[in-house]
Image 1 (cartoon, rainbow, N blue to C red):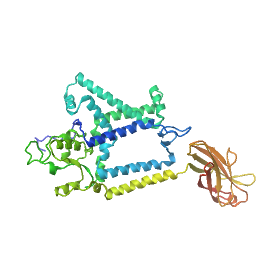
Image 2: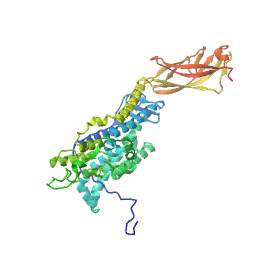
Image 3: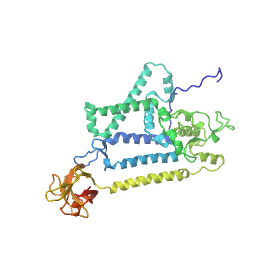
Image 4: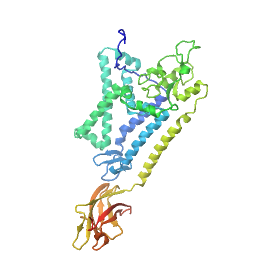
Length: 473
């Protein structure tokens, strides 16, 4: 490095981004997605769902205390966590599929960071004005007007952030009851802590860090390249049509781009799409709306900035027609993702409909391994956990099948029938007895099968285990 050359800076201060209001089909799509996703998030905990007595009547509830997940008519128990794992795998494959087909479409439209940042931008424009007004306010001195506008904006942001954190905790307890507890100061400390953390992160990430979360904190921009190829549809600039750019009425030697910077002014991450594909681009397509509006005003065809693939560039430069969008979407990679995603979804659906309302686990008690009764019978002890996943109290009969004859007794219960409360689990001690002189009593190990039958529906389930005879070593 020469003596006159300045050293390269390792840190560059953030340049604030003030996106301009824009109208168009993609902006309208973002409005619809914002309203739908925020509506689902804020409203869902308040939807009621009648499941009968002694069961929560909240449609969607993560009941951590009882280790269950309620989703409308579906109830997931701890031993059925594979449903949750399957849904997470489907979410990952779905993200791969959409990225492979349409680039960072998730980031541009549905990512929570994008949705809440867009909401905060809307509040900012409503209070401080559009891009030029916000730029003037940013550069203005801190007088009464600036303090008033900023404090008003921050208060609205804070209210949104509190509502965001509050809505989250309502998914983990009965929403109306928890709301009363929160207002009266009777809620658990963890509820207030969770709301505080989510309020702070929403306020800071959505209001101040904004595009920095997408650029520096989120790993997906660095992963997405593995999901994309030359047929992936993403936002791009037709430089062969727009260059050389410039202003003026004499456009014989100029491209369609008039260098108005409308695409830059509406970008929520502050980049220039005309510089080519960039890690920061979230493919929200607002630059398309802005450019199409300018093209319409100057009498040029729309699409100077558009959703397109790299292969479209080569075709259009060669004068060939643009490839049909469905040929970009339905190709080998996306078909494989779709098949995998659909297979998991179909598998989970089948498992959901064929699962039994009874679940049983058997744990042999091996201290002692067996007991010799006064008449010479051999008795083994088992702890049988019966899970009643129905919405009514149910009687269950416990029986045993094996090659040898056995008798069954239930501790504290007459006969072979036990009553399990609605939607609960009961641990029942079961004695299996082999008569004196039988092969099972005098032998070593005997395989047996313990059956549990719902007497109201005759539904049965079983668990295999082993009976120890007196000859066990």
